[in-house]
Amino acid sequence: MIRLVLRAWYFAPARGETAIRDKLIWESDMMKKVAVILGSDSDLPVVSEAIKQLKAFGIPVVARVISAHRTPDEAADFARYARADGFGVIIAAAGKAAHLGGVLAAFTTLPVIGLPIKSSTLDGLDSLLSIVQMPSGVPVATVAIDGAKNAAILAAQILAVSDAELADKLAVFKDDMRLGVIKKDKNLQGEVEKL
Image 1 (cartoon, rainbow, N blue to C red):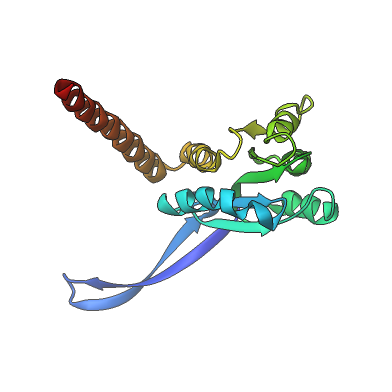
Image 2: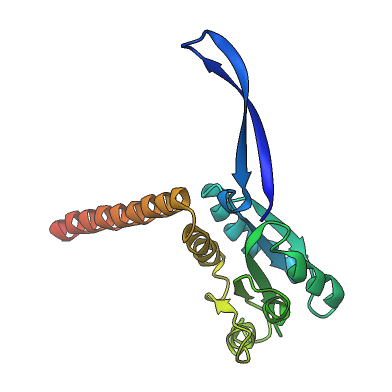
């Protein structure tokens, strides 16, 4: 367990003085980062939705282009050291053969979320099936083809297991969705009345 010391100035009104307080922060108390790994920079238009959603939740996010086939050593190294580098979840976005998520999952104990990217060949079905069909012992969670926003929400839910503040943000997010549907239903009732 890594221990960090945060040194902060504070004002003690009872004594009318300013002092320095050291506070120990354990690694488990710090928010984990999410890694968004793209198999190709051409995946960015889809993956940007995941990055935006993670940032909306206040989750630190790092995006990298690492290819399972063209840079396999870099993929293995990234996954191998991801936990030590402060990551809590990895999102792996890839199209066609989509082996990236499986390669990363082979070298880490962190949760890996596969994001299948739609390709021109089979509309992303090849990517989806490649990610879903992982061998026993090397799981990769999978979202829908081009389902970047859901990948980010799932990553947030995984981190929220040990982060109450993030869990509260997710609860507000879900309640906002509920209110949005109620509003749409009310609008629909008004439209039906006009028919």
